Image (tube, rainbow, N blue to C red; front, side):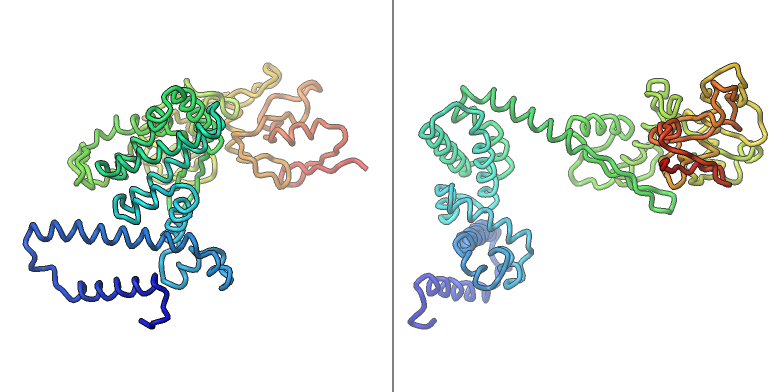
Length: 422
């Protein structure tokens, strides 16, 4: 190391030299007790080294600026071949300790707190800071509260790992401000529930191979309820070393697959009469197929969205689901009610959905289950409530067809084209 090197760099160089000596030694022949000690010591050493790295990152904004990088984490990830998320996580820890949580930083540098414990403690203290608006306290009282919380978590790190520390952190206010704990927890839970509702989503992506991917983000309570229902079908074994669970018929299949099969079973077990009306009728599965195919279980059938399944699967569903087979060649459902009813019947709605599949406005792709049945020749003017006089329109286009600001014309394929009057 050159004589002009900064003492910090000189000391880091000495540490590198000692690491070189350690790397030349083979730990294979250590005794069991010596290996236990070596495991603790090397883990301790690695954590302290990472903590010191985070401390340098926290004060190296000028390096990122000089080299035109977005931030220090980006510089470190690029120049040291570190994964970007790892560098970003270290940067957040280092900056938090440098700016706000000095006791945590000192404990990390001294090896009294591991790196993983440090991440947990800083996250908990940041969460506590977010509760400032919910507590009626002076700035001095608030600063004292945060200092006691930081000291408490650093002390607990001597006895508890990251997971246990995270659990202690959930009840941190009960330790440092018990008089405010209940109010803050209630407000935080309400805010979390509101965020969960706003972020609730579900998407279905058809893969084109007979399967589809369902991806959902739901509130925790809903996820727990779903899991409980699914596990009533799976009766899983929870041994930590089990990656697959035995099925009831003797198969061994991955637990995730069993949950998927349980989800399918759950949907088939739902009582359709308990569901809201959908497309003019209680939710049903409509299948179009040839009568002989239904009887023989051979061939294929068409679902309402145009996708195909085997006739055998259709027969199975007929036993378990609220399935309405629109069997070609039968007269099982009255489809022409003439003038006896003004509104289209559930049977007619199903037939319209099978025929139209989507809104019949030109270029509109709203699915049939979201559409409304429209009389081509108005019922008030003598038009019949019959399939030949009906078509499906989404709510927007159904309103439009009755809006005198627009004219519409029937196209050769039966669709409706709209244009605004000039």
